[in-house]
Image (cartoon, rainbow, N blue to C red; front, side, top):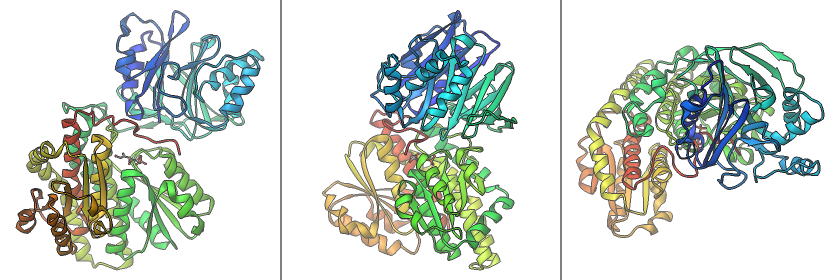
Length: 607
Ligand code: F6R
């Protein structure tokens, strides 16, 4: 978690750039914020508990003069959110400032050593050992550059880190191990950040720093070295096709709502992914011994849908394992004949990365589906498919979920072809339905958003919800519940409807809201049975059903219709959309900011 930005420029007013870039990183954490900028040859630190606006909004950026600066937005791991624990952290003299994302695992040991040497560490963070260690090594005679490198060699754990030092204010130095750092190459200005969106308004020329690399950044050049042996690494500049508007709100009150509305566009682009990428990916899956999908959170729900589609459409047995459980469940049985399919929008989720690395050590093939080109997961993978959602800023995943499901749908059709489980005309017909989903989502949003608002206004004060579905819709129900709980802080459980009678039904009393995901598929009649069970206990029934489904509509207190036909296997794509809208409007009605749910971060880079 945490967002980092660094800017070094020939221009001497970078404070505005540092602060606005930092705001674009707030989705990574927002309990504290801070900057360290050059001011008349000194380093000035402004930091505190609170959001970027709260902490830095009062700075008159026209009156600052520096041409180098770093910033940080925090998601606390070691030490409570407070001024003292906010980054950047400095050494004893205030001449070295560091912003860090990750965890220094041996910080207690390093801290003890530094305190014995007379350093005064004031925070409870792991990060603070870094500037003091650099100071110590610098005092021993190393240049700041060398001291930075040596300090990182002594740190165990993970870091995306950037430093500026008063004695060399013409350059900043950054490095990474297991936490992302991307470098932006602008005109007379260079940036480093945890994510491209931070500096996207200024440049689309990027270098993805790799694990174990550090970079010395000046306004007009970048030097990359290996931390371990100081070998110089050739530069690899990529051009990103995202544009800055893609990372703005475009008139919507929140990123989440904008991203829900953008889903047809994201979906169209993803469904255009070349078969030159899909076919070899599917072939690896088909040729494997065992196939395990692994992911976290919303991506895990996409993986469960993937498992269902692989099984149903291609008759390929596979498993889906939550990535934080992978080491305990999936790993023992893995061999070099197997493949692991990792699904992660950010490509940086520590649990998912860890699962892939462990599986790779066992010789398994690693295939990944991610939304971020050049992300860490792409580098441990043999085959990668990059979904085309564009940047997702809202902490709650919406459009990236839809494109993950779309990608898994394309893979299942390709698997069906390879395995001969569907004939040519059946595949073509399903493909046509898939290609129609963007239009279908447009129509859901256009015709059903008002209903979602009305239902949110009716039920927003209910303390608890059940979301139920059968078959593939179980995962849709789980995703609906996750969306509602994470942004509106309402307790919600997603459950297989058939299982609800084995426990959850005891929650139900008159007026208890139960949301049913009810597409007209083979589970339909059995689901009606579950609706009846809940109705018998006077639950309030909210259904997401097919268009003009009189049977379900009669049984429901409220319903949202999904226009058009869709094969059951692809139903999560349109059926999840009203659940996203319902969660969004419930959060707004309850007075919360859906883009920044408490305690959550967009990219979870701790295990
Ligand atoms: C929920 C949400 C999270 C992520 C999870 C995995 O809305 O966004 O549950 O899905 O943290 O993130 P990625 O997909 O980046 O691996």
